[in-house]
Image (tube, rainbow, N blue to C red; front, side):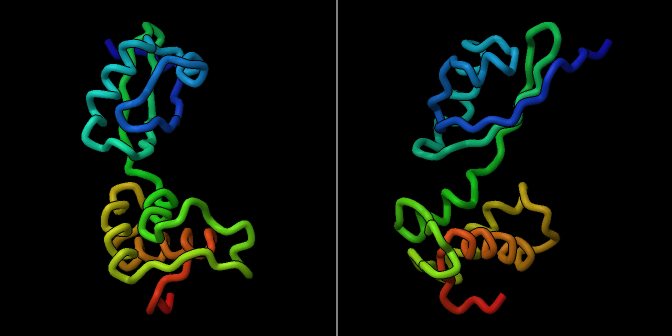
Length: 140
């Protein structure tokens, strides 16, 4: 017999650093059990923010799916800046190369709605544009 889904929640935690708290309480899962499972699964990604989709069942059991690090975080690291522009149209805060864009797009492919790397590059380039980050040599 299949379990009945109680709730599906999308959250973000530091890799290897999930702790019981209000965000997890709203998910309705066994918090210590989730934290240890998440931290074990993400210990190699230390220093990154990891999105996770948690499916909680009525019997307090759960499953979770890890997603790739957000494109905005990867773009900030590639541009070596702390935050994006407050007005991306007029104020540019950093630059990345086409190689950086391609690496980020290839990494994000599993989570993007793109058929090829060029499509993924266009999606990531849009995120960069909205953050005030220029891409050297990109004509998309």
